[in-house]
Image 1 (spheres, rainbow, N blue to C red):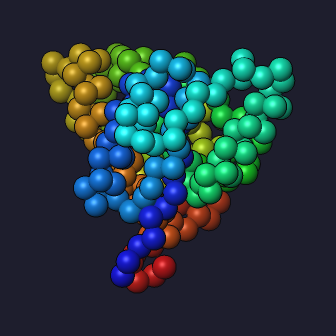
Image 2: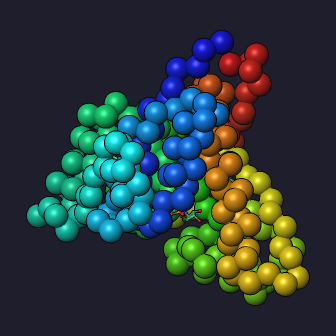
Length: 214
Ligand code: GRF
């Protein structure tokens, strides 16, 4: 059965390798989605440049461009609405999403975190800090979590989680790169489930319906 591409808007602050992976999976026909906008708080963000280079609407939007936080929030929401966004994906977005936007996209906003939440998540645990903490603890596995976004950092219910082994000689860099390879697969897999309308949310439990249950 033909699946209608889901309209996704991505928020990123950094290099944007997850945005690139999503784009490339769409281009390969492995993901039924359309990247309708890339938005960043950081004008020098690699994800924005990638979007511009590939004809994807790209927006630099920062609270500092507005006189009030409310104006910024209204602009964000208007942008998402104008682009008929069905799903918001945060891919290394380093700002807290305003609560009003989170509410408007309740159960339709995803984040990706490079650990098995709730371990090694929350404020201050991002990027290399996550992998350092995993190694300092002596963990044998780490992983990736794609989760729904709620008002706090990294606390929304998981949609998909996958393990990644920690090796004896890992450094934060080698672990980060193994985890990132998994990120580039799992995010598209999670988005595809939304495109296929197979995500059923009951409280904190995100159930993935089989193709015949939906
Ligand atoms: C990823 O590790 C993601 O899990 C985290 O931020 C990083 C973004 O990397 N939330 P990139 O900009 O997509 O390369």
